[in-house]
Length: 386
Image (cartoon, rainbow, N blue to C red; front, side, top):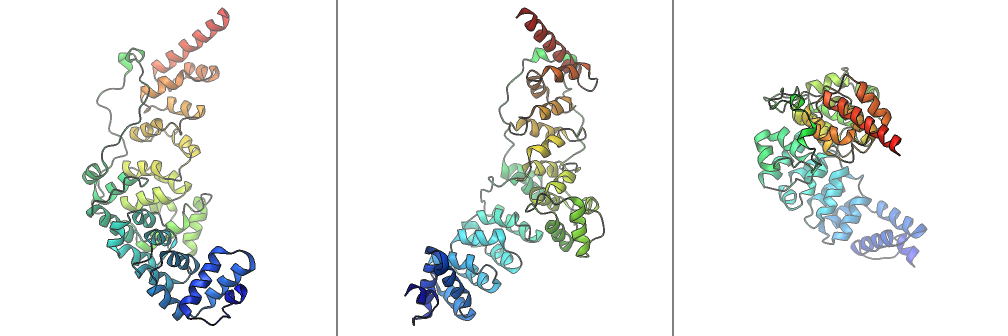
């Protein structure tokens, strides 16, 4: 009898049949489940649309969203049904493309009620840049707390400017670090109070229009976080195939405005981040480090780049997960913009081989070289004493 029901062979009203098939499709396994799901797929489209439109059962609507995900018309009906759970709409927003994203993004009441939709749309690589900006504007205008979103401060600054970012996102809270006695840094070699301005700044974009939406969408599709193995050449080949641009990726990125660069830094893959970490805008560099996809290996490479801004290097130093590896610590000790507080602490934990390298190096501050020599001397005396 259950198999006959799964095959839609029992006479019953369409609404009851739909509920029964959803039940079998979500609670059974094997042939029975597969048969019920096939019957759901084979139901007349107009009938299903009417049932979804009129349903007030959250579980049924959630099941329908997942089962009919490839049907744009059914997704739109689900998005327009006020009874569809916000979590279900969020699930669609993270994976959807085209008109359904516009429909979800235009529903300000739902966005205000369920702020996770903002993050879902922003990190969906198929969401147009104009839509993500509009959704963020809705969130900010309604005072939603989005501080949990990776790179929130950088997104706000890219769209609304530095003043807005300071007001909305609050100041950066530095992680607690072990203090180093000031006498260990000779006065003549302490970093000067008035430091040179970093090459990377966070100046506003002055209305720079950026690249066309079509080109940006092609870049997002080619350099997507869904496949972190995609390299720059593959991405450029993908864009050339779509006849969107014949320029190399680094040239296209140079033409982007700050909001576009920040989004690519947060959502793009390793290749995109490798280019954007060198950007002249500090807000873009910091967005790279806020990307959920960035790895310890990437950060280890960034630590070797002497051209990076002091803010970027300091942010790397403050992250204990990124600086666990001795090789990364050594790169940062050698970096001219690493704060002495971190350098001195890490020197103490280095191997004797690394200390010998520092003691002979002319690329590190004098107090680091001297500290390395002193530590080597202490270790040698300890061995002799033992």
